[in-house]
Length: 457
Image (cartoon, one colour):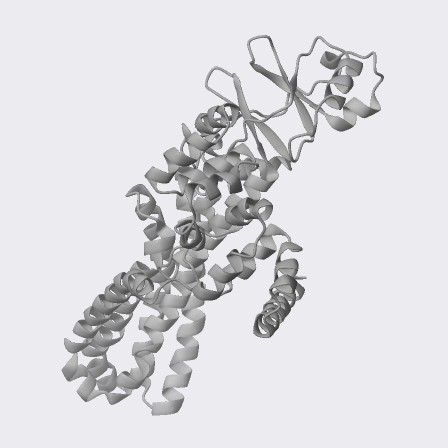
């Protein structure tokens, strides 16, 4: 399925290029506006800036808002920067409240005021109710447009109320039950409304076990709750239990996707919102920090090697083999680091189970260390016919494969406590640790043990 989607995107890009070459603007406009906003956004992000702006001009107004929401922040900003405030308001006015709030938070402060002023009074009040909360909390994710009813009415009354609505809010699967003070009591599913007798009271079929989400709950915790409970929607309440809005599965999917992209891009020191076709100078500035950091750690490793120049001159074989140890340590540490970062993100790693995880990873490192120490000894001896070199390499491999999982567990936990993103900084620090310890282990052991081993053999 994923390969098919990629093929479809490639085919559309090629077809659009062919149509652009022929100059048939009407055909091109029809092709673009026949696509889903998510597909349009994907095509825009896959296009260089000049073509992106050209394609954007061909998108119908009714598709602009949904397309902007689907775009990454940086690609969106490149288009929004060239739009008039009136055009922005027209594009977003028909979006869901939570989408409008997300969009507005990405705008420059001057445009935020203009966009809010252009909304209807009811829309503005609803959007402002969401903007009170941080965007990474349940309150910042919620949609304030909800269907509610009281528990002391019968099903027939509720069904007649639903028929009077012009349309139901998107992803409506339940009605939320509240009391006269607007406090949350429970939910009633639409399927229960349709399958029970019209004269039956709502209070007889209400599900008061359905979880209500506190407005200050983090977006990651919300995503975990939806995953654990298989929820499609959930009400959001304040600290007094008063209903504020609801969160739907589409918002949670966005959180899960953003977290996954953040972890993947963070390993390379990049932002998940980075535009594929961002200006060269902008990309250079972003990547320079991590390239400079890596250069610094490389020089640090080179300094360690320099301290053992005499050892290297006495055993040239070490110069050929010594990079194997830090390389293996880096891979082993990265495996543990990735596992721990994922566990932290999912809330699976807490103070009470950290020791058990550390012991497990150290045992794993010990077993792997013994296995690969034997392998590296055999290969080193086979190539150079020097048992001393083989023993040094084997001990260094064991030590580094023991240290790697230790660093992989502790680094992200310490970084999290220091309010530093483990996904962003963890891999750079881990590489530094495994490189320096790897080289020190090989060369230090060679300096201390190699003459002694050779004298015994």
